[in-house]
Length: 303
Image 1 (spheres, one colour):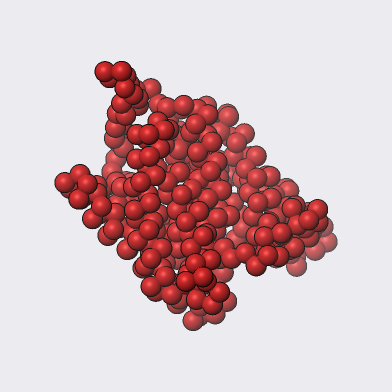
Image 2: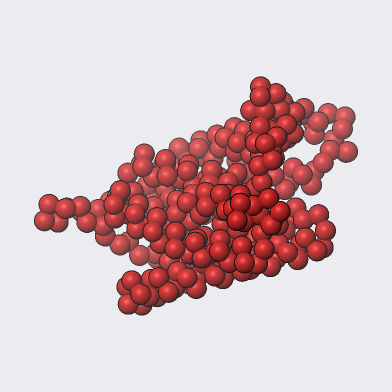
């Protein structure tokens, strides 16, 4: 627990330092090279310090830290601390700023195509989920997670040490998500829409997940339902300002099923040890939420 806490602390602190030095400039600077990477202006360090857009910097810094910290759960209990600090620096310095700039930067190639990711299903969550998958595969499983039995590889559950603390974390995240999605709202009415969709999707996802696990296992799965709430939140993040109540319910319903399917697929089929389901919650549901905007957008969606 102490190791994980320290890694999450360093995600923000190391990330803040490198994002300040270069990452923010790569994200928000004018994009050349076909809209691939921004050109840092370093305005915050020069004479324009007092007039610099610090609200934008802090806004993007928190998003950057969120992307970085997703990975710690998938790599839990088997990552050398110094190596994790190096990873944290690299993702905040280069990886997040470059790919986020594609969608949110000035002249980014995705933004030029009309790409919609209001608060980061793709830019933050899918990126973090893919990175988590790479890390989990590269590290291999925890000791005792997979054993051989009758010639087959068997997955052994390693229970969380404190389920109430995990539940508290989910409640805090859900509450914080209203700020996560709502901070970019352009009006009070748009903020109300965002609050509505950000409530519907995780609620539906959790109910659907409860039903699926209840039917499948004979009883509801608490930890899976907690992950389903996060899956619904991740799924709705891209289109929170662009889909209707029905659209957000559809996003939540699919997320509630998808998180169960991907967790079990990775664990039982591919034997990838992801202790907290980060790949399923953030990677798979982030990808679904991104695609769902194209389907369910109230103005330009395909459905």
